[in-house]
Length: 199
Image (cartoon, rainbow, N blue to C red; front, side, top):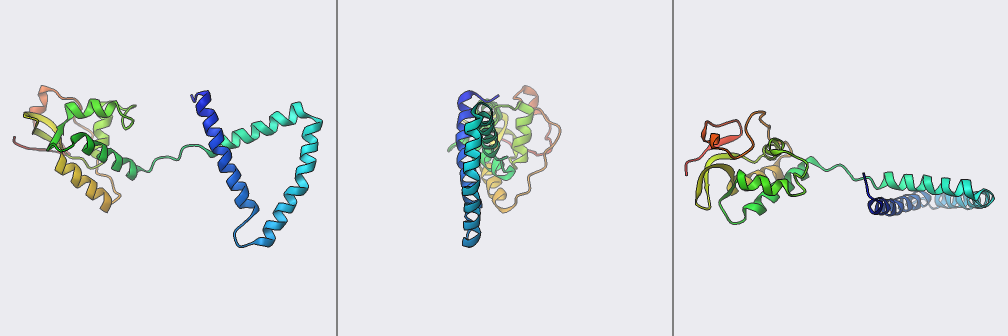
């Protein structure tokens, strides 16, 4: 549920959006005659509306404000994220966490991503699926910072996923199986979307 401050901010933003929409509707580009007619109609309609509000301020004023606030709230609704852009930002976040290292182990990556806005509402399994949908290859038994034998993501693979995303909007298929945490059992065979690498 939105807080009072968030609600006020959305109504303020939505009011600006509605004002711009009304302005564009009243003054259509390249049609001055229609703009004059519409502005004239508004000028004729406003005085009776204002007089009606003055006669019944306890009823019409709250109603008018309520309708405006409701419209403003809906106008400022967040735009659903573009899936391709979301995948791109996830890959960029992984690359930022990798830094200048050859890669990052999942045991380090998962907690840091789960604490970030990218995965705040996900669990380990869902995060793994998001990584693989973004085209990130999970490599088994890789070495990072002198530690080997753990699954992780290589920087070269993340860079390749970013380049591939720029060429094609299609997401990589997401395998249904696979563990999400870092356990001793990860020394087993490969799964779909993973590859073995000797340290």
